[in-house]
Amino acid sequence: MVVAHLGQGIAVEHDNEIILCQPLRRLETVAVGDKVMWSQAAPGQGRIETILPRRSLLTRPARNNKTRPVAANIDTVFVVIAAQPACDFLLIDQYFAVCENSGIAAALILNKIDLDQSHALDSELEVYRKLGYSTYKVSTKTQFGFDELKRDLQNRVSVLTGQSGVGKTSITNYLVNDRNLKTNTLSESSKHGRHTTTAATLYHIDSGGDLIDSPGVAIFGLADLDNRQLAQGYREFNALMGKCKFNDCRHHEDKGCAIREAAQNGEIALSRYQRYLRLTQKMSL
Ligand SMILES: Nc1nc2c(ncn2[C@@H]2O[C@H](COP(=O)(O)OP(=O)(O)O)[C@@H](O)[C@H]2O)c(=O)[nH]1
Ligand SMILES: [Mg+2]
Ligand SMILES: [Zn+2]
Image (tube, rainbow, N blue to C red):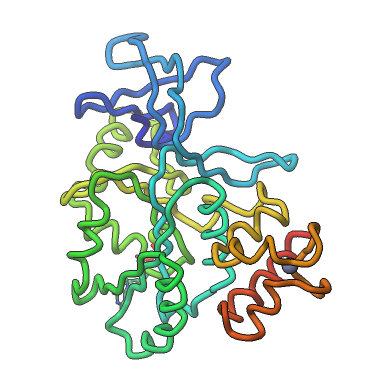
C-alpha cells in the first residue's frame, strides 16, 4: 500500500515495513492509498511494477485542464467543519457532489463543539443528516464525541478534508499516535527525502482503520464534473429529476422544473438548491 510521496520516491508499506520505491517509467501516476506490486531494485529500495485496480479515486486539478490522482481506494470522505473559521457550505456541497459521483461515502464532522457558536450550525447539519449522511459532533479540545467516530472509521480508508483551520490536523493527531514515525524515519535516512506537507499521507488509526491526511482543500475539485453530474451529486434531486418537464432541464429558470418547485415548497432544502445554482454558475465560468 502506498502511504506517502516523498521527495525521493514513493513510500510503500509491506508487512509493517516501509520501502522507498520508484515507479516504472511507463506507469500512470501512483496515488496514496494505491495497492501496488513491487520488486526489489536494491537493498531497501523497490520498484513499483503495477498499480492494482482501484475501487475509488480522488483527483485534483492539474495543468492543461487535466487532473492528477491524489488518493485511491477511499471508502469515506469526512468533511470537517467548525463554527470558526466561518463554515463554507458551498465547499461542503462541492465535496459531497464529487463523492456521490465517485462511489465514495461522504460524512460531516462538526469540530470545536466546545465553541458556543456551534449551535448556529445545527439546523444545516440536520439537513445533511436527514439526507442520510452521517454527522458527528466532536471537540479535540475537550475530547468529546469521538467514540462514534472511531467506530465508524474502523475497517475502512477515510479522508479528512475541509477548510484550513477547522481542525483536521488536530483530529488526525488525536486519532493517530505515531503520526510522524514512519515517514520521518525515511526522511531522515535520505537527505532530500523531506516529507512535503502539501502531499497526502496515509496513517493507521490506533482504534482501527486508515486515515489519509490531505493538507489544504485542493485534494479534489469539481474539475471532472459536468452540470448533469453536479445535479446527480445532490442526492435529494435524484427522485425528482425524471419529473422535470424537459429532458435537458438545467433546474434553473426552466419551465416545469420539479427540483425548483420542490425547493420552493419546502420538500427539499432551499439552501442546498441555491448552492447548486451558484455552483453551476461557478462551473460555467
Ligand atoms: N476551540 C477549539 N479549537 C480547536 C479544536 N480543534 C482544533 N482547534 C484549533 O483550531 C486551530 C486549527 O487546527 P488545525 O488542526 O491546525 O486545523 P487544520 O488546518 O484543519 O489542520 C488550532 O489553533 C487548534 O488548536 C477544538 O476542538 N476546539
Ligand atoms: Mg492541517
Ligand atoms: Zn429541473
